[in-house]
Image (cartoon, rainbow, N blue to C red; front, side, top):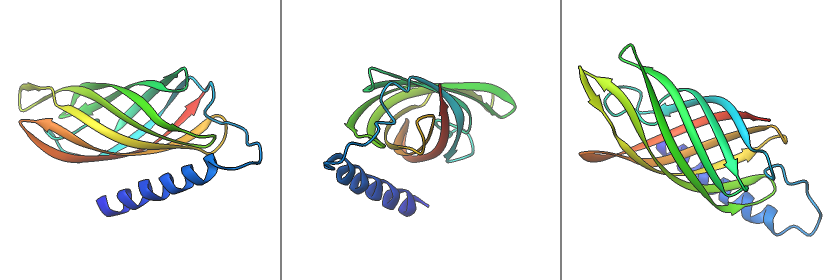
Length: 156
């Protein structure tokens, strides 16, 4: 699965670079799309290495370059949450690449677990209001592990 995500990110980078050099005017689907909500599916799936976790997700892009995200989900039957921040380093009309960091807050085995994450991702807008994204990152909880995620967001 990790290989497919890596290939998807590489393909998205190539598409993003190709689209950014076009001479034909293209509608910028990412400009001003602000607040969105959606679903996220991430791996690994089992605690205590869950991050950012599968669940309901919100995202807000500020000035088209800086983003915030919050996700709520259930781990071991208890409500849990993540908070993350993103910075776009490639902002094209349909494809954006970003880096980010954040923390998750949940309980596992009766203990509070707060892993940190560093992530890179790609967001592809299918319409001005619908975007899909894929991420690959590192989870830091004593030792580092690879995380990955897929999601879809509807922007207002």
